[in-house]
Image 1: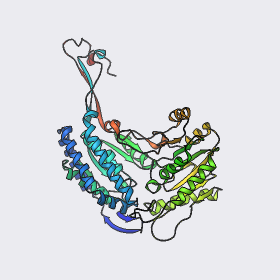
Image 2: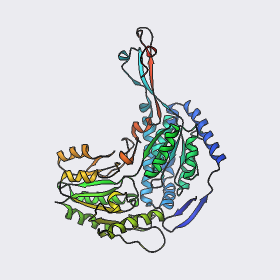
Image 3: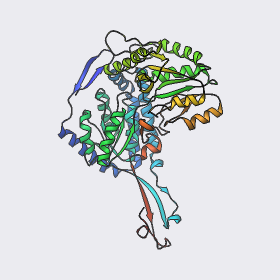
Length: 472
């Protein structure tokens, strides 16, 4: 098992790390448990001060952090800097709103024969976060900010190809003032996850990653009776109807497919276009994809950098070749570049059929599949005809169609005339094989809280209380 920084632009291994021993893992869990007891005794205002300090550090160190991310997984330097800025925003959001999200929630005391009744949200303890390489800072921050602000501690098992980013995150929260052990990076492989999650001091887990990884975590957590939040893969539909602004839709479609070099769970992947505008949209979209500049991710003029791993690049090309071999048409791209690094060109494939892998699988690279449909009902059938349900996009200026898409698209997120993205202010997550639970917003904070019912009796409360009532 290798834990190393390998530059995707060159294939060169730049830095390697030894995995932690069982003794080191045990000590790290112990520190997280001790830090939880410390955090439990702090106020929201104290934690907000530390979280705001973390945001300030992100802003101050933005360029260097972005450079590390680009070197480790190949995203463009410009997008890496934007990711750091987004993380700082999320940190400040939770620092500002944690008191509101954690405030006692009053209930109808009279209805339950109490003098007072309310709900209290309290932290549960150390939480294991198993995180992916594609947004190596943001995926972690959107867990860490709400978890730490709630009073939990974090144990990070990051992807093995972004170890420097993982260590940077531990250092960030320490420098910001959080107690030692409040956020700890575990340099371990996936084979250590069972042992870590089985430890009674670890109370829950969150994972962003593949469907297979999600099933594995859920199985362990189920055995141990521990809470999980899973954000898994997606094969997001991007539906274009006749009333859509085609120029704008084609422009956004290009960004939506190739953001982060096409390596995003919520990137639009299946472009479902009404027959009345199919040819016009396909022409505009293919031209936009062909115009994207593939090259050095540190160059500000670059639109698409290399894919993060050689295995990932090989898988994308295998999916494209499978489509071609089974009769699909390539409008743009589709050729495997020669030379060093794990590059892949922006690619558009049409004439897809159900026998092809691209019909049913997520493609994790800058490859778009175009689907022609003849009606709204057929568009919904194709859009929902996958095992995934993470994000979705629909382009129409018809108010009735807009309302129907909101209801009919089977996904955790529906974006009308815009590109699917995540915001600290809105809950984020999926349905079906895209996982369960929600990140971000108040919901994301409360996922790892004990939602405690409080019933208080006394003078005037009446003679019937919990002990004299049915327990459930």
